[in-house]
Each structure stands twice: as C-alpha cells, then as structure tokens.
Length: 293
Length: 165
Ligand SMILES: Cc1cc2nc3c(=O)[nH]c(=O)nc-3n(C[C@H](O)[C@H](O)[C@H](O)COP(=O)(O)OP(=O)(O)OC[C@H]3O[C@@H](n4cnc5c(N)ncnc54)[C@H](O)[C@@H]3O)c2cc1C
Ligand code: FES
Ligand code: FES
Image 1 (tube, each protein chain N blue to C red):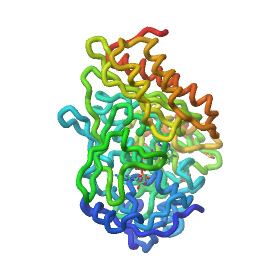
Image 2 (tube, protein in one colour):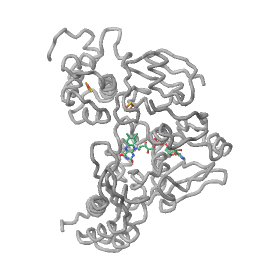
Image 3 (tube, each protein chain N blue to C red):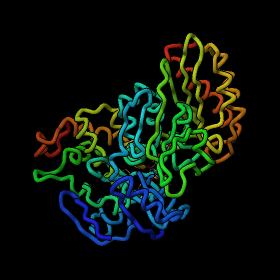
Image 4 (cartoon, chains in turn blue, cyan):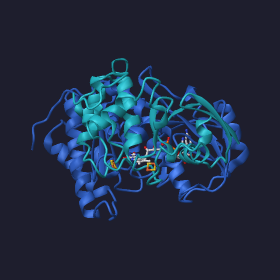
C-alpha cells in the first residue's frame, strides 16, 4: 500500500488565503489542485511537502472566457472542462486535440491546466500546447502579479518560474486572426504519456505564415526552444516543403533520451514527423491546406 | 482532522489523517469494500467512485479533499426498487467474469448514462477507457451498458428474470 508521508492540510478559502498560507510556510508548502501528479509523487516520496494548500474550493480560478483578444483560462480549469468548452475548441482546436489523448476520463475529471503546467513534466501535453500557442502564465504572489511567457516559465524538468509564496492563477492565450492550431501525439496505448508529441500554431496573413509557434512534449527538458524552426516558417508561404523543413529543424533541435517508451533516435524521428503533421493540420484549419510533398 | 463525507446519501463523519486516501476511508473506515483497490498508482481504475456525480480514482483523492462532498460507491447503486439498470445489464450481458473491475465500471456507466442516456458504442468505450478489465475483453461490458441504456431507471424497476432483450 502506498501512502504519502504525513503533512498538514489547509483548504484555501480564497486566493488571498492560499497565498498567505504559501507565504507563511515557504518552501514546505505546496499547492494541491487535481492532485493527479502530486499525490502519486508523494506516495513514492518523490515529493514530501509539509503543508498542502488545497485550492479546489477556489471556483474563481475555474473559468474559460474571452477578454479582448485573449483567451483566458483559470488555473483550476479541469482537463474535462477544456475538452468540453466550445469556445476553446473553436479558437484553439489544438487544446481539444491534446485533451482527447491526455490520460483518461476519470483523470481528466480531476487534473487541471494549472497543475499540468506547474508540474513541468517534460512529457506534459498541455505544456507543449501552451508553448505552441504562445500562452502567457499569470503568476500571483506577495510581490504582485507577473505575466510570464512560456519561454521563461520553464526552468527545466519539474521546475518553473513560480517562486515560493506564489501561485499560477491564469493562462492567457493571444487570439491571432486567421489562425490555426493542431496537436499530434504518439503514445504506446490509450491514455498513456507521449512517446513524443508536437503542437503547432500559425496564422496565414496575405498568403504568408505569421506568428508561428511550436511546442514539443517528451523530447527535451522542456516544451519550448524551437525558435529556429519557428523562424524557418515566419513570412514564408505555407507549403509541404516549408513544413518539412521546420520539422527537420525541430528534430535537430530536440534532445530526447532513450527510455522504456522508445529510443532517442525513434523519438527524434517522431519529433520531426509530428511537427510537420501538426503544421499541416494547423494550416488546414487556418484555411490554407497544403498539398502533400 | 474531522471529515464529513456524504456517502451514498448518508453523512459519514470520521477522524482521519490528512494523508488518508479516499479509497482507504471507504474500505477501512466505513467497511464499504465494494470499492476495489488495485494498482494504487491511478492507472487501473478499479477504485473509481463518483465524486459529486463524476468518476474519479479514489486512490488519488485524499479523504480530506472529499470533505463536504458527495461520494457514491457501488453499494449505493441499488435503489429501493431493486438493482440499478446498469447492475442488471451486467447480469444480462455477462459484463463480468472475476468482478474485480466491475464496481468501477458500473459507476462510470451510471455517470455516463446520467449525462447521455443513449451513448454510442464509441462513447461507452471512451468513458471506460481509464479502467482496465483483464477478463472480458470489454465487449460484454459495452453490451451491458447498452442494455442499461435500453432499460432506463423508471422502466426497469423490476427487470424480468432471465430477460435477454
Ligand atoms: C494515470 C495518469 C495518466 C496521465 N497521463 C497524462 C498524459 O497523457 N498527458 C499529460 O499531459 N498528463 C497526464 N497526466 C497528468 C495529468 O494531466 C495531471 O492531472 C496533471 O499533470 C497535473 O494536474 P493536477 O491538477 O492534478 O496537479 P497537482 O497534482 O495538484 O499538482 C501538480 C504540481 O503543480 C503544482 N500546482 C498545481 N496547481 C498550481 C497552481 N495553481 N499554482 C502553483 N502550483 C500549482 C503542485 O504544487 C504540484 O507541484 C496523467 C496523470 C495520471 C494520474
Ligand atoms: S487503485 Fe486506483 S487506479 Fe488503480
Ligand atoms: S471482470 Fe475481471 S477484471 Fe474485469
């Protein structure tokens, strides 16, 4: 039987209350949202917080809405709510592509977008999605509210820019007119973590690619860092060749390791192939399908 | 810590450690051993119960997190008028062999039918996709849920013995 080590538990009654607890207990304290990454880690003693601050009552962090030209998602929004949101599916189908293959329905009933991003597991699908759509994390703490782009949010595996006494409260995604997005994942079996996965977003403005974004899961220390591939897309006319080139660069720039899910070489191959496929599907959704190479 | 959890319609209060898992609270403290416990790692889904009406893996929920919430276990499926149609469906369609996965499967089926009374084969398979069955090959589980869909709650107060419809 796996049981976590002892800890204290407080249920936060407001965001301010949660922050006060986090501030007071410092390094010892951890937020618990869905608990579907944290509790398994605590059972294995990979995490041993002295205090859990439960934010599940903070319904003010559970929303999906459009504010101006940004899609705003509260940190406590569950996987299932993202999957069922018509607004999310319409503006960013990449979220629905990913949510359909993240874990399974009972896990999706609990797991949250905030927990997914803060877990910063290199294989986390929503991290790659948020990287591709150039999301901005809104982090709140004693020092105030900070907007952190995904490129700066990830400090490495299991490490984010969210400091002691802070919490992630919102994810904001810029809505790009004429945009399309898609996610492609290869896994061993239904509901499993990715062997490799790729997210892509782009817009087509005056026949040329604008605001390209690429995020990869499970093939490096974090989902970000594909600037070279993005630069190979920006300003070009969408075509099978351009997408293949971006895929080739992404495969070059990723850094997979061999594990039980596959060899590094296989994952690198997938990274390129899935990037290319995601780009093609994103272009199709942006209203600019390209013919096969 | 003291928790009060509404289990199958009844408030149950107990003193628990914060690290106590919901599955252990149900099985050890309340003696509701119908909720099974397998992998302990949120993978097998045999521990699925309904939390506020939705399937969750109770090995990955703290009892203190369920404080003030509603939990439904397999013991709460049977109504005053007899078995839930889902239970009857598992009998009619041989939806189980060893029975290990069955409580979780039936609760997921109940939650699915509550939202979607007429699910497609694909929707049923998707709903149970987080729960492993080592015996049936899933086909009869899908048939059991389809049977229950054809015999909604009101109509199935007294299912006829041995009916094969
Ligand atoms: C069987 C299984 C299969 C899975 N498969 C996949 C998969 O295929 N793809 C995938 O992407 N994920 C998968 N997951 C992970 C799942 O998506 C988790 O729900 C998610 O990683 C964590 O979300 P959570 O809300 O449960 O976070 P928690 O476990 O509650 O928290 C995770 C971490 O984030 C911190 N945290 C949470 N919320 C905040 C916040 N608002 N501010 C600051 N810190 C916060 C916590 O302190 C903790 O360190 C799987 C999980 C399981 C159990
Ligand atoms: S015991 Fe909970 S998922 Fe296996
Ligand atoms: S009936 Fe044996 S595991 Fe499903």
